[in-house]
Length: 279
Image (tube, rainbow, N blue to C red):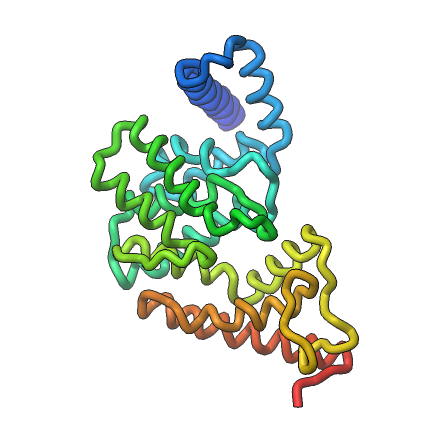
């Protein structure tokens, strides 16, 4: 019986995924007269799925992690990832941010429906860290979220709340969060750049960008300016060690303090191991 139920669920998810894709293709055909071939569009869509870092069905299966809003999660999950693969902004990142959102909301309050939509869609547009357009990523994601939620029939006030939270979450965009939900999402996302997860993510991104771990001639940057475009460890000083000072909620700030100390301990131990301890 459990096997039958599992198979039925998978068939249902495949059907829903295909329905969402067909609706999206139909919209593209209406908006872009150059799109003339439905078969060609379907092939392009399946190509994106094959290149996806997370298998779509397995990704959809995690909707239960967003209970009691799992139905909303299933509708939004197909739109959460940009086409370009980025392991620092993948499914696990969304789950960690959602866990952080819940931990903060338990003490601070906030509209859960707005928060889940903003969490799932906050990275739906990807711009590489080394791109000159990086600061526009959250604005582009907010615009895409606005289009999607409008199509889903959300009211204008809720859509605006989601869009503002997405736009304000980004460190590089420098947008001040004005609503409680925007403050919670910003804190939740920045928590994922602190602690041991923050360490893992910075070295992952630096590896993708082809950067060195540190400058062996001057690991503390005593005789040079910090340069996180070339050295991963410098990013601790240019950004990560400053994040804990800018949290928006009391709960977020409390969680950030713990993770900030972990960052400091990691950096101290790393410097000791490479023969350049802090003095």
